[in-house]
Every structure is written in structure tokens, then in C-alpha cells.
Image 1 (cartoon, rainbow, N blue to C red):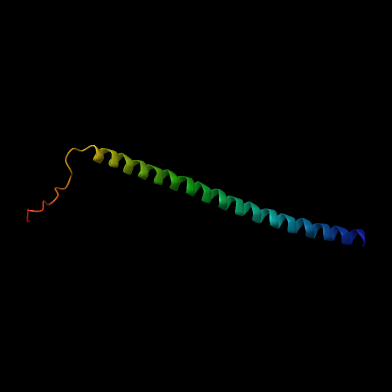
Image 2: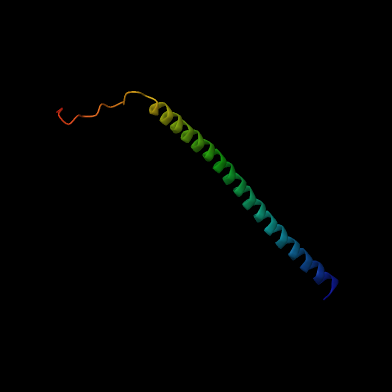
Length: 76
């Protein structure tokens, strides 16, 4: 193999490696964005669950039920 052939081969390999690295960079950026979205979604879900738990705590300390139960002898 001549020096010219080696340089050509080297440039082709360099180009291939650069393409693969660029693709890996794009994939990494996509993963980072998806991770950021998951973090945001988990914060929203956590807030919603905490609100539901607070509501459940508040409703469990009420002395009278919100809805009046129908007694056996009552007809509505």
C-alpha cells in the first residue's frame, strides 16, 4: 500500500468515526431531553399524589360524612 492509499484510507476512517460520534451526540442529546421530560412529569405526578394524600387526610378527620347514607327504613 502506498502512502497515498494509506492517507485516503485514514481519511475515510476518520470520516466514518466522525459520523458515528455525531450520531452518538444526537442520541445523547435526545436522551437528555427525554430524561428532563421524565423529571418534569415525575414532579407533576408527585405534586398530584401529595395533593390527593392531603385531601384524604382532610376528609378522614371530618366528623360527619360528606354524603348522608340512606337508612334501611328511609325511602328517597
